[in-house]
Image (tube, rainbow, N blue to C red; front, side, top):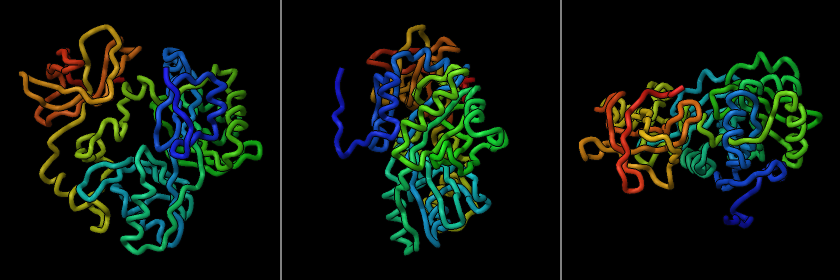
Length: 367
C-alpha cells in the first residue's frame, strides 16, 4: 500500500472526487494526471462493460487545441493520415509520427470549425510537439489546452443511458462524429467513441467546475441499466485488439508494425512530418508485426513493468507488450511485437520472471 501525494506536477480531474466516492482503490499517472484503474472488483468492472454500462473518468485524454488561420494546416502537418475530407463535427483517428516515421501518439483529431481543431491524445506531450512544429513552420496558430475533460460511458447499454439524458438524436450519431450541446446547463461535446469495442460515448466536459454534477447526472440515469464505475484498464481492450501507444509501442515502432498502416496516407504533400520516412518504410517493408499471443497456463499472470522476451529455438524473435487474463477465453492473452517472418499458429516461448512459458501466436482481435 502506498500513497501518491498531490503536487503541481500531477493534476486531479474534475471527476476525481466522484471517483473517490465510488470507491477508487488504485490509479496510474497518465498525461500528468491521475487516471483511475480499479474500484476494488475487477471482475465486476469487466463484466459491466461486456454486458451493461461502465462509467469512466478519462480526463487524462487531454485535448490539444489548434486555433487560428493555420489550424487546419498544422493539424495536417503533424498527422500521418489525410484530413482533407474531414468535416466540421467529425473526428478521425490518426497516427502522429516523428521525423523518423515512428509513432509518438494516436489521437482522434476533431474538427470543431474550419479554424479550430482538438487532438484527443494518448500519453505523450503533443502540446509541446505541436507548439514546436508551428513555430518551426512559421504558422499563424495558437496551441493550447482548452480545459476539456472527457467522461466515457461504455458497454452495450451505454447508448440507452446517454439517450435518456440527451435525447434520441444520439442514436443517429456516427462513429467518431460529435455534437456540441448542454446537459442541464453544463456545456459538453458528445462523441460516439471510446476505448472499447462494446460501444459507447465520450462526454467532453467544458466547464471543469461541474465535474461531480455531470458525473452524478449520468450515474443517476444509468441506475436502471446497472451502471457502475470502471476504467479502460480491463481485459476487454486486449481481447478487442485495441492499441495502447507507449505501452504496445516503443521508440522504434512505426505504424505499419502495429496495424496502423490503413490510417497512414502516403500520397500527401511532403511537408507532413515523417512522411518521407514512412514512404521508405512502406517501400522496404516493416521488420516487425503485431500479433496476438495465447499463453499456456490457467493462473492469471499479468505483465509487469517491462516487456517479456519472445523466443523461437532459443533465439529472440520479439517481445510480448501486454498480457492479461481473459475472463471469456479463460487464458492469459497479450500482444506480440515479433518478426515479420513468423505466422499465426507459430509456437513460441515467452521468458517470464526468468522462466519459460509456452505460447502460440494468434490473430487480432481475439474476440
